[in-house]
Amino acid sequence: MSARRVSVITYTAMHAVVLTLGLAGEAAVAQPTGSIQGNVTDSSGSSILGAVVTVEGADGNSRTTVTDQEGTFQISSLPPGDYHVKISASGLADWTASNVPASTVPGSKPLQIVMQVAPSVTSVTVGLAPEELAEEQLKQETQQRVLGVLPNYFVAYESHPAPLSPKQKFHLSLKTLVDPATFAAVGITAGIQQGENSYYQFGQGSEGYAKRFGAAYGNAATNLLITSVAADSLLHQDPRYFFSGKGSIKHRAWYAVESAFRAKGDNGKWQPPYAGLLGAVAGAEVSNLYYPGSRSQHSLIGRAIMFHFAGLIGLNLTEELFLKKLTSHARGQSAATAPVLREGTPVRLIAVEGFSPEQAGGGQTATFVLAEDLIKNGKVLARTGDIASGLVTQVVAGSAPRTGSVALTNVTLRAGGAINVPLRPNQVRGNAVRVPYKELDGSGKVELTLFVAANVEFPDNQ
Image (tube, rainbow, N blue to C red):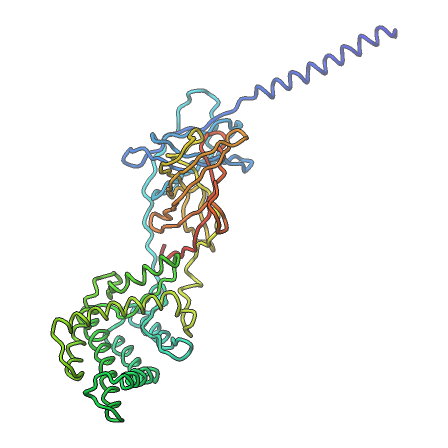
């Protein structure tokens, strides 16, 4: 074969290879992509803003977006194939569908999704009857002592303390009155009064000390028996302080102060402190029978009420902020069962309104939705679609396309629509920083990650 003929054949083969590769490349470039779009409404036909839409392919890769004001969504640039679609919104049951094709036809008919109200879940706990449960809890509480010495019986550390019967309220008060530490405290009080010659009419010496001791003990007894037994039983209120231990120190301090001006009823609801007021006034009237000196009726009642609330505020603050760590046999507040969302936990959010990459400034409130469930020990504490909001103070475009950062303050997530979860921009405590954001593929929606700002305990039934 001539050299010329070999050259022609070689050139022709190479040309064919190049042409084949070029056609294959064009076919790859021209490979169509699809999209999934739809309209989301509730059962009344109202559009749902901020429903979280997730589509997942057979390869396990997923894309996420949220619905707009009209309840519409679209995720584009999807490889051809069938997808699993899940839609979540706060207070509504999840909507799911399998084998949803990514349409490659422009203007194809969107999905019409109607979401239903999430069914209420009733949990039934099989166990002790309320009075038996209260008896078990009372045994625990009557072992509580500060530094192992001072009785700290009137504090409930349980998450769900059972209401006390009148008999149990009497038992709690009587055990306090006959405790050696109570006699010691009364003895010290009488000694101080004698040293300062308070109630000089009692005189001095052993007789004067005995009178002061009897008056001080009588004062403690009448306050406990009239308030914690008689009035609380008659008005169905609980004489104990209900330890919180949740949130920041400021939050807990406010809870302690607020608790001085309210009482928990035997029905578990907060009420005005009728029993405490009645007991304070009645106790003051009784003490007037054995304390010497003349006091007007108005000053007697006024002083009794003033000292009652001032004393409760001080005692509650001490209980809430200091004494649990010093109290023996103080039961951890359902530490084994009550889930806690820990400080620093990352929280993925998608912006719904009030913030977009095009915004260059701040000063407006932004609304977000939770992009994925927050789960602790197998329990869902916050569901996809739960709503968060906060103030945008600055938006800065990033150097890379579809990225940037935003400064946010006072961001709070409403977990399950009931529990406030404070969020912050940085995982560890420190100065505020801007939060990086990015646009989600195929939807243009903005996603960012914040972090839980303080431990948040969730009730067992949440």
